[in-house]
Amino acid sequence: MAAGTALAVQEPDDEELVAGARAGDQASFEVLVLRYRRAVEAVAGRFFFARPEVEDVAQEAFVKAFLNLPRLRPTTPFRFWIRRVAVNCSIDRLRREKRHVERPAAYQTQSEAEWLGRHLAGRSLAEHRALESAREARSLVARVLPRVAPKDRAVLYLLDGEGHSVAEVATLLGWSQTNVKVRAFRARRRLRRAIEELARGAEAGAR
Picture 1 (cartoon, rainbow, N blue to C red):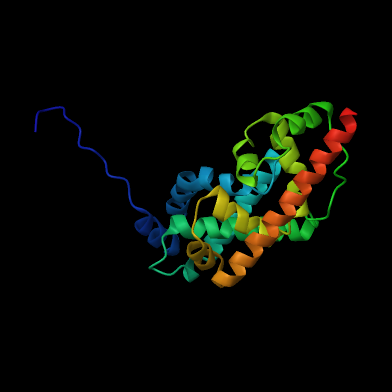
Picture 2: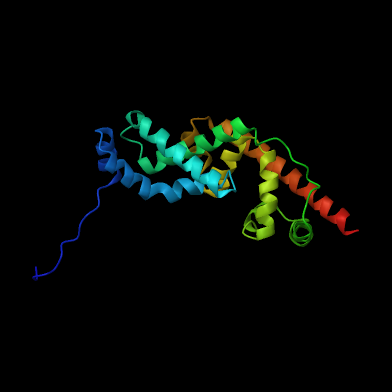
């Protein structure tokens, strides 16, 4: 090796860091937090739209993960497990705050109504999801999602947002595959009805 050439420092893998954290090394867990903070916040961001809430849920997820490290099975990757913890924390928070209570669909801004008129009428639910990046769409999604029960919302997030299979979601949440399918069907039907209701409101407002 040529003089002055620095050796590459290999970062510890998740298993090493988990083992260190279990042994009481707080620094090891802090590395895990830094490594997966964005992933955890991405999970929370599927349930909450306000940044402070996303950060609160992420912090709660890491605290719970740290306290429950002894329960983490050696065969379960940390990256998989921490997302499960984040999903459960999001569901628990929604339950505590009763965030699945319906909100009036008729309340829309003018820009939201125009967006609905242009994009929602006659489109499939898959197309609705593909358009969520629009500012008006995101605002509407924030209004519609509270109509879906927390557990059903988690199923939609994992199936449609993360692209997991039914079997993977069942394993992640500890449910049967039948339960996952039923909840997904119910949630999609609820969203479709809410979107149609919003579209009708947009049409009525344009008359």
